[in-house]
Length: 103
Image (cartoon, rainbow, N blue to C red; front, side):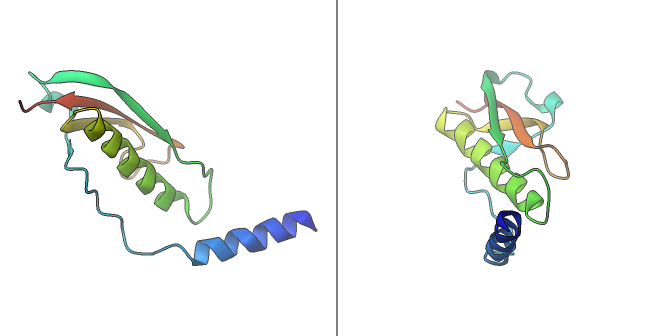
């Protein structure tokens, strides 16, 4: 009975999820690894999705990507290179290297 209740609640919460894509407001530029030559490396930033599958997995990855980019910005970075969890991935976490490329 408890499993059924969890499933009903989970599907109910999924119905409340907005369907429009999140727009990254961090201002952090996402680039390829070969585009950070001359930039100052800051750190590696990781965010887990908290979702292992199902209909909301991609949405959870999108939120994790935006959170990671905001963390790069908060650390003083302006550029990020995704190592995992980038758009189109199936990872359970997002990992990006943050850089400061503009002075």
